[in-house]
Length: 64
Image (cartoon, rainbow, N blue to C red):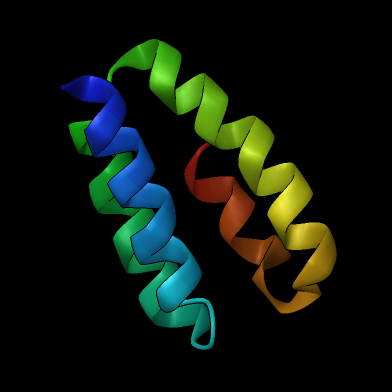
């Protein structure tokens, strides 16, 4: 079940990546709902994802 939440979180973040403010809001929700090891996985995924979307780099501070 938790894996499904992690995958769902990634899909939501991909869908809202057009708006950095909305992206940050969803990212904050994700950090509250995910397990600690999933947050670590999300950090790694965000590093990769924000390379393709540099306007979202500022949102990395939410998970740091």
